[in-house]
Image (cartoon, rainbow, N blue to C red; front, top):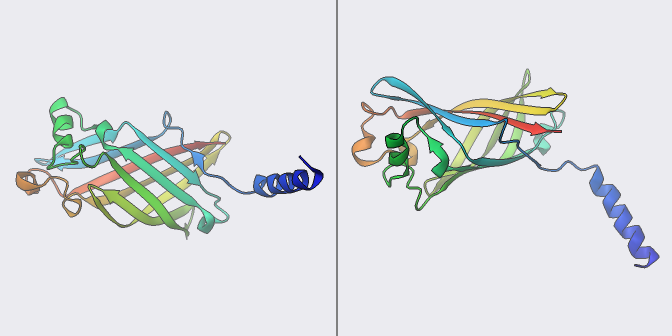
Length: 183
């Protein structure tokens, strides 16, 4: 490699070293859960498989990015019958739509350590804008991103046909996440 090429490579390396990069979430320490009501009984479930990359600096949240992909086959609603039902066409239709995704297009500070990511959410073949509030807490090992947001299951055609009756399964689903990004 000639001297000019070496200088270009070294300059490129030095320039990119200071840039923030997307960091993968430690899924062993993280969780994505959901709560809903069935026959007026609260049910808590979780998504066991997901992947996420986060680029975030609390001093410059507008330069941040978040992407998450949730494997819907890994949904656990607390029983084998419920888990099998979630894969059916009327629910997640995992044969056709195996993942739910969110990719941020904007992150803004709300004050008091609170932030909001706005982006595109995809579920069951539909994509639409979604805003997700979250907090960030740093410790010696990394950053914790936590939040809760509501979803209308019927707006996303989750629980169609006979399951569209909100007397049996409530329309509102609370999605809770706790994501850890190590340093």
